[in-house]
Image 1 (tube, rainbow, N blue to C red):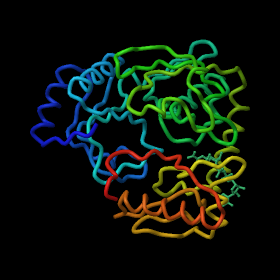
Image 2: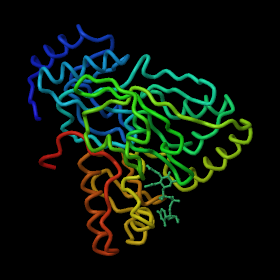
Image 3: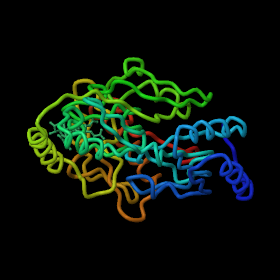
Image 4: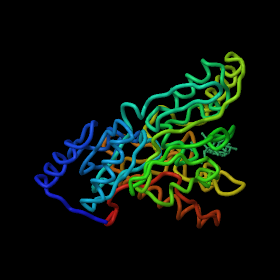
Length: 315
Ligand code: EPU
């Protein structure tokens, strides 16, 4: 589903959609400012959906006009092509960022930052989400990626999600039906078909000070081992079974390898960091080079953890 639109065509589409939803609709919005690595071209239409009805309307509109929809969280695990993304990019806003606590459950909108979900649950004396401390991202993105650390992942505490589908359905789905495994959920198999409007986490009571002590230890370890002062998409590749992509890339001698403005981090080899002026294509080319070298030198085929979005055809 590839749709080329003129600027006038896009303005017309945006006007029609504006009449149907509460949230903002922007035309040719540069995605670099919505992505942690700070690179990538524009979204034809960029929509801030403020509620479940907005999401349904956006999908209905997309079906009517034959446009692809690309849901975006906080852009921490994605690389957007320099040519940008055709169709509609949607982020959660307004009500979809709300969070409330009901007993031992945390109900968070898909657009709620994970960091806020962690801090508010810890303040309420609820443990479970702190294992995700330091993982950048939104609740929705974290669900889709089954985000995690060595201490645990979303699947450990997720009870259910509310999904809005391209066909207009709104369903509460138990976590057990999402096929959650290491950095994977079934939602990744059908990109653009679902949006995570809300997630419910089942937590357990614990003294907030004890949880905070664990967080302090995680934060220290992370700061020491990851290039947090640089722009990146987080870990570029999934860890192969029983090994670590970072260890393999390091063992292959690739730390410091560069392509244009992109470099394999000297601090943690599974991070590609960028300097001002870098292009998304530099990152992609460097990542491909890393894959080829690791395959040749270590005999392991690395798989992307980062999601590649947009038009990459000729790069
Ligand atoms: N290592 C090296 N060289 C490096 C990097 C790592 O030899 O340049 C070695 C380390 O010494 C260690 C092993 O590789 O023995 C594993 O490294 P680390 O403990 O840093 O963990 P990781 O497997 O590389 C995973 C997650 C991170 C998460 C950390 C901490 C993946 C792909 N990565 O990293 O998640 O922050 O554990 O819990 O699952 C992410 O998903 O974006 C991410 C960064």
